[in-house]
Length: 351
Length: 282
Ligand code: FES
Image (cartoon, rainbow over the protein chains, first blue to last red):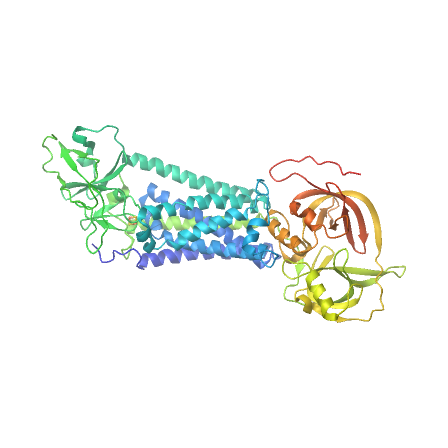
């Protein structure tokens, strides 16, 4: 395994990623500010900052949400996914500037604590049109804070990938809250078509990409309906699997990646231990299954990361009979060595 | 499904120093698309805004203003602006507000304590930050009680020029004068609702902004039956389009509306729904 196998090292690709991200953010902010000052010189600095940061953060959230399905649809976009957490943390910081300016501008220096004021100044909770739109914005910011604070792999390890992933799925709750925040807030004042249509188009893009990716993924993952002899399930022909690549199969709850490499076939869990990345979309490199998301690696015959790393995957029994690949959906404990099926000896009877 | 990436043999791993060349084009295209979207979104949002008031808040510029202090029905500094044809003194009334989202009462009370005498009706100098828009001016006592810059001779007696304008119903938006006259842009509407509530509950008098058919905008100070600022009564309607019923008066250069005893405020076309507006009683 490569000596670079560490999740949090800086490398040229991360630097390029961050550079491009900051460049695009600067482009948006400078253009937004320049147009404001050119066409609306009477705007206050506070309103300029609030509008520029709020719209930028919301736009960035759309990009964050679209990158995942985009890479599912076309793996050539994978470099966009690699450093997405930096994008997420930066988006939180921009949101924080927006939130802080809002709290100070609209709630500070009054007769009530500013944070209390966020919740009690507008009490039209039962009303849709007058709903206190800053409250969903506040909770969205809180979710973004929790996600940013736990984005480091330290938390991933300590919380377990499953808990961490569930926590970070809260990004969809944050998106829903922010959409409420926008539609019940600024859109109630700025009712020009662009202010209404852009968030609507954004929502359609996010939903559209997710549906398309789910559709493609479903087609990519074989889901057999029946079990065969001894519980083995027929998956595909050996030649259906490209060399050093995998066939993904979902049998009941078991999400399995069956890899073909060096005349052998092995089956491991399709779920990467890092952030649940789809290992079956990865490749075998230097003898290791390599996750397409951030490059975690595992040995195909025992699901173990090579030393000194300790991640382990469940393994499965696999057989080849007359060129047909079969897998048993009963998982072995993580890291259990299972002999690969040999392609050259694949003509023996199954039973 | 065959994967073109796999067919080409290229495979991206983030920790490698360079991405395979086959990825460069799609990634560049994506970055170009993001740049284009950024330009489009920023341009569309900015250029389709309603625009902002040309109101002025002289932030950072403290001016000294001499006039007669009036505390009731709302604190004002009556600055002599000239005389009319009959020789009657005309006033430019500066509506006094406190720093932040507070009324001027506390600062004025402290000034009176420091001076050891009531200041109402006296000619004095007040330092503060001017806020003005559409012919109406407010003075923020930015320095609190230190805004007091001296008593002048007491010879001038304030004689308000008042006029009864009768019972009336007016349609408009209830807002706080400090933000509406220049501190915030926009100082009205839904995004500003919480701030207006904070300002009015902090003691800044509530205003009704009435857009007239002629295109002119009128500002009317809302008072309760006791001729005190009607903030608590109207707080639930701030930043909404409302119809307000009451007795209209003019005092110098400001309009005052003494709210009717019963249902003085009714919502008009609440956001997201319709409302039937009853006629004003009386
Ligand atoms: S390496 Fe991150 S999910 Fe697999």
